[in-house]
Image (tube, rainbow, N blue to C red; front, side):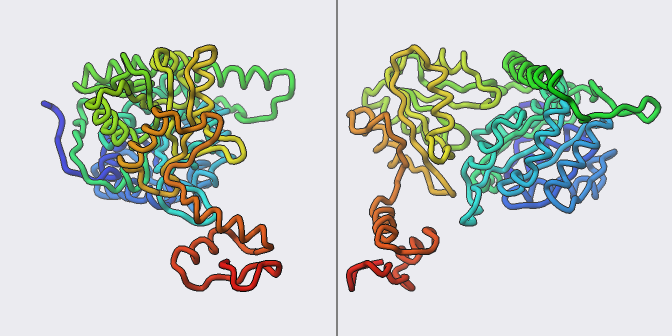
Length: 432
């Protein structure tokens, strides 16, 4: 398209380029895989003079990075950071401060599993753990979507004075090299106006922010945070429409329906898994199956009306998500059930891709067939490609008095060496 460059580029580098074109004045960062290439790329742009009038702060921790962003944003400048996994958790206290103060910080979350055990691969456990922190959460299906969502995220954050995180699957997207249209600086400047803060710390008129608020006003503060999130449900589609008009491609919006108009079964998912889901949907459509997909671009705020409208004609809804609430069930699934309240659709919660496990088309086909042929119980939480035999062996070991962490025992069982003897009550010669 005229005015844009089509490049074969790594996802992290593309995001760094897009963020630079948004002209942040302060970038505060601490590296953690798989986010590192993003902040390294921005550091290179600042050091090389391509990103001017920007202060790049190498913080001593993720908590320090977010704290610096809070200070910079409160002082009235466009501010950015990026993190992942344990780094996001380390920021947790400061995340709530940023949203409570209504600061328009933009952050990339390169989604990665949370330990223990340590796992550097992709799932959505990190951002989902912060789903109620008051940050808007946008999820990218592809690197092109990640680039486009970052440009819109700055505009959204600054229109509403709220923080926004753009979530992109770690390694799956951040380290993938693919064709991406990078917007030119003039286009971004036209779409994203100069930052005018809605609140500003000024030494000439000193005030305290984040000071003590008692019962007389705390509920009202929280209500206004919620009201801004609800307002975003109207603002995001407007921004997406403006983006499409200027850049010539869809901006993302709240949800992404795919072949849902006549679908009896609809698969709901977030992030990069949507591409695989859509491919299997196409295969099943060729076999005459009335199936579709619904990608969730905006998870917070939850687009209840849009999800309900997209799923209203479905009799079966399969939610495939890369995180879950331990001891409760699917996180996205519960939100989908809320949207479908009063409608007859049956919802199936399926956890997939934890810790980077591939979500293959073959596994998805098997899953969808199991639902279509009534071989799955909608009351249970399902785990795609779960190694049931391995789990049962570990459960048997613990029932027999075996001790020690599950992860190490199962790894030893998988490689077949160094197995720890069973507990004292185990019959002699039984496998551990």
